Length: 132
Image (cartoon, rainbow, N blue to C red; front, side, top):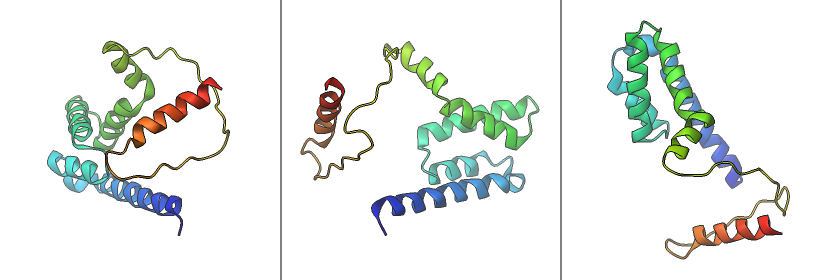
């Protein structure tokens, strides 16, 4: 089994776990801690999970059904326009045009132990291929 297949299988288990938890929402509708733990268990992250739960609570207080409130809270946090707005507020310039880079359609895998400069090298490779 290739690395990509293992990654895909792991993500499908995560998606199935979160979907199963959301489908059984009636059983634990008001147990917000369980929802937060389910989101963290689905690799959403603690900070984002807390934000999603807080937004879902607000929606529930407005009378929105649980499933719709959860869906809206997740979409609000994951939608690119929302993220762009937040990034602009802190000073990031996101008005860059998307352009394809060479090598087109290829994957470059960078492997190394902690602290050897993988991230820096990836950034340099990205800059190099964009400038070509």
